[in-house]
Length: 279
Ligand SMILES: NC(=O)c1ccc[n+]([C@@H]2O[C@H](COP(=O)([O-])OP(=O)(O)OC[C@H]3O[C@@H](n4cnc5c(N)ncnc54)[C@H](OP(=O)(O)O)[C@@H]3O)[C@@H](O)[C@H]2O)c1
Image 1 (cartoon, rainbow, N blue to C red):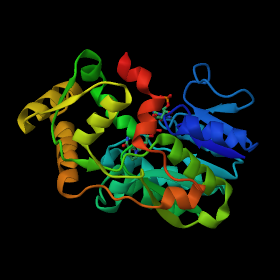
Image 2: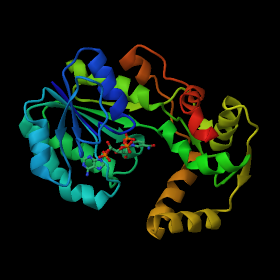
Image 3: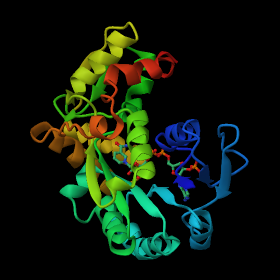
Image 4: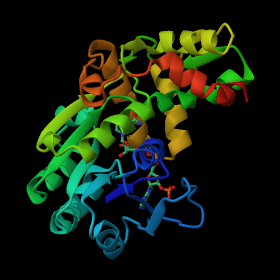
């Protein structure tokens, strides 16, 4: 029996479908059982990470757990990570944790802290360090729906955007096959793309000619700070994006190795979500 946390999220919903279609007994751990839309025959269990006994209850009896931790705050994760590790460890389940490629270089990040907590407390774990999710380009939807220009910072920031269905396929492989225990895999899309090229591909795929308008650093930082109501978070995000200019995200063969198929292209993600850009 495999418990999927974050089962309503962009990776979790693909993973639940994937495991269910392979006739694996899958239980979706969700905050709101009345709202979660799940494939017929998939059981759900109520779980909120704010309530540790609900986490304990959700993972009890599982052979394997897909673990998603939604917080981006390192200090919040440091506070809760020990308890989460103990609960996952005590369940005796194998754990696959959805982490980020950035964990490698950022030991104080939420991802690195959660990885350590799991590695210390769980006997059998697998870590999936992912590069940027393709869904991140949804940040441009309002501009693309209302015109042909995307005004944004860092045209040359380069990321290996990964289709969330590929993360789910890779996660399913590690949850079913015990040979991935103790492994850390870097999951990426098939190619590293500059943001300006991502915008061009979106335009081409939806039949439009889209332009890039470079937004100055200060303007973008202030816009994000206003949007988030948090200057520190805006600065952190701006710095992370800026780093992708000189240090593009890597491209690995892990998706192919784990799933037996090539990672889906960015174009295919845009095609799958073209209606969102057309509005
Ligand atoms: N975006 C990227 O580029 C990127 C790259 C690497 C790693 N990641 C990591 O990937 C993870 C996000 O994955 P995703 O995109 O599949 O998720 P998502 O689409 O952002 O959805 C978040 C999921 O977490 C659940 N959740 C939120 N708060 C919760 C709580 N208090 N208790 C229990 N469940 C809660 C949500 O459930 P509800 O339906 O109840 O809200 C939902 O299922 C994060 O850890 C992120 O750091 C992201």
